[in-house]
Figure 1 (cartoon, rainbow, N blue to C red):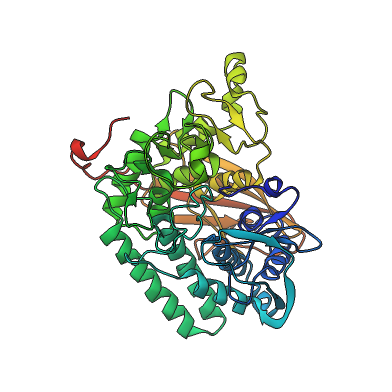
Figure 2: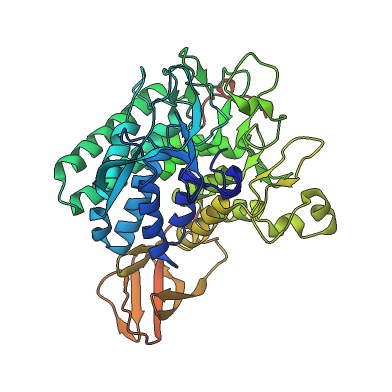
Length: 486
């Protein structure tokens, strides 16, 4: 399941799933990230691929052709190392596992792999994952295998030729982030190689994935595009649009057009949800996989998949569109789904936890499903703390690039750094885009708070200059003939 939580596999660890979970713990419990990075490295086969999920403590689990699982290890490692400065974790040795290769045409198998005699450092595990994950198809885009983040598209590339546009943007993000880790580790050659491969992905996406009003979703084994205005179903999918922004890989003018298309075609303000894709798969001859087994408007098949909805909001925040980002956060907030008895009767699930999905079509429009969804909760936490309030931790420095709604003048927060607490006030100041920071009455020379763990209370005042606060202009949209109606 796309970005599924631990419950998906009956108390199993999901490789991508719990890596996403722990990435949200950078500010609160970074050592849990460290622990889990090593746990996941131990579930990597010698060939570089990983168990999609496994049962603890035996290690029995599933080997698949899923194309993105393995890439979350270098991404989570980069987040941890760049955020904490703990480069020592890169030298921790972890054994690989061994199992039989997948047979031709075989989607997956469940087995108990053996512990390999070969070990590698965490850094070597990450490099092997990137090398395995950087396999490209005829358009220079990554092979989708038996599904990418959206497991339910498991037939798009099962023949070994299908490609994923979303994965191109995601892999670009992994490569650029891990290049920084490689340089810290003294591996300038791999850093340069990663950046060259990222540039090639960016070029391939612009040459072969742009559809006129948004980026396509994928290419089938046959070369037929998915997520195109000419597609009978799934004409637009939100995640390549959002990740074209989040990754920084998309052409700036095109990404604004793409996100405007997301707002126009996938944001359902009347139903308080953001669809993953539209139209849902139903009656066409397209065979993307088991996604078609879901009724139209349910889960990945055209409902709101909350991971993706949050990524869309993160993308608007990254574009500097604070008004729309905060509006859409309010739209998908569980609290606002139950602000009246009528809404609660429609939503039908708990208002105090995040739901994996929200149905988008009758007779279940607006009904939530699969609550206590850890992955979506982690991404929503990061959306609020990092994308909107703008906190960024780099080892012992905390900086702020907030994306605030127009009517906010300030906010306060209590930030704990190890065993030391900082009472921080962030406020808008005069014109310009500078940052002024005062810690314990002393003005700081740099635009960040230097954190110290002295177990003493500290106060900090952060003043952010008022740049142009109007919503960023969106480039002229493509001709209406290129945009399918809602």
